[in-house]
Length: 284
Image (cartoon, rainbow, N blue to C red; front, side):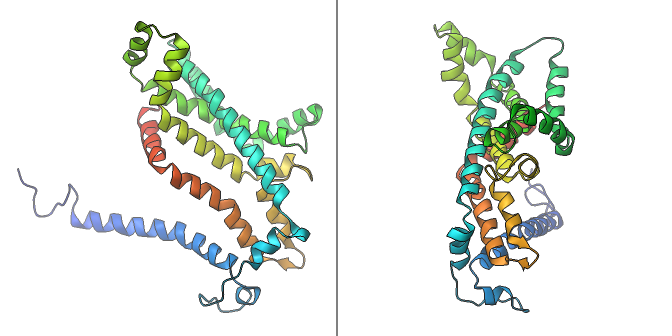
């Protein structure tokens, strides 16, 4: 039976128009600030401090040169951010994958209670765990160290990784793994060569989300980091002084912090969308 004239693709024309208007508003809300930050980062100081914002100017990389210059070099901040983010993400992904696999295959009576307890630790606000972690890190000598930041990031990323990966593993048909076992593969070989490749979207999704959390963190870094372990988000504080705000370097720093996550998201967007959709469907 043909569709009625008032519906197109299952939606009325009014609903489609409202959908596109909503999409346009969301795009404007997210893209315009990023675009303005990018433009401001390549503006000369005279164009930034003018009373009337302008889109006509001669682009310059002066702000980036001063950001990485000898007097205000943020390279150590970037190195600390990369080490802490990559290590915390790798650990969360490895431990979360193993624990998520076990949780998905466990049929004990307390499985749902354990799964809820794991994700509930992720729901706790960061402010609630900063003081206990600060006391622990002080006794262990982990304050002002990248290792302390890695453990702090892992404490929040790991429950999320376990919860998300268990949802992906639960969606894998048992018959696939059982067929590999019947064919002579060990349980580890069946997991590594058969089960793990089927949850590749879940691995990518979990890894990207854990990396975004660690890369953008400011609360843990401002509490546990010191002169030897400060990260990129903390470098912004050096550009806000009593003499004023250095908007040129601040926007350049914003681009440096934002660009890697945007590039990573675009590079894995196919798996990211698939993973988020699958996780939303299968998560209990």
